Image 1 (cartoon, helix red, strand yellow):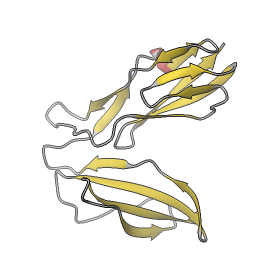
Image 2: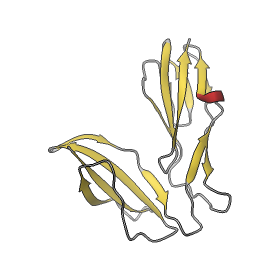
Image 3: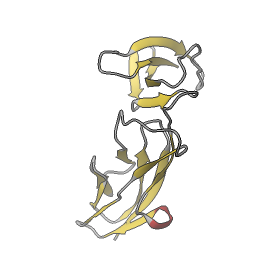
Image 4: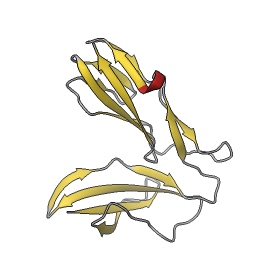
Length: 155
């Protein structure tokens, strides 16, 4: 039905504040300080019921020495991984900065998520473990929302 956007400048002292309720899937915040990191979460609601909460996103505005991730690199060749049932493999993901000139500050590490935990699970450090035979996808997220999809086949 609608989304509630919470956000603030990054930092432990800066708590999330309600910014706006929107019905569409797009929102642009104006009058932000350049070269500054901001953090956001989005909550999907239907009436008074919360349906889902997004991962936190930490994004730097343009115009300063701070930058964002452009992409993610992993050890997975062609974005595919094969693992045997009961065994594990490490992804080794890293965020690639938008440019060499801009520095990325680490506000939140890379996060991982499996779309089918009955086939394969992934730890917070990027270790994929085969649970049962089949295929699933592992999503690798940088702090600014850039992600990479890895297809996992469990034999």
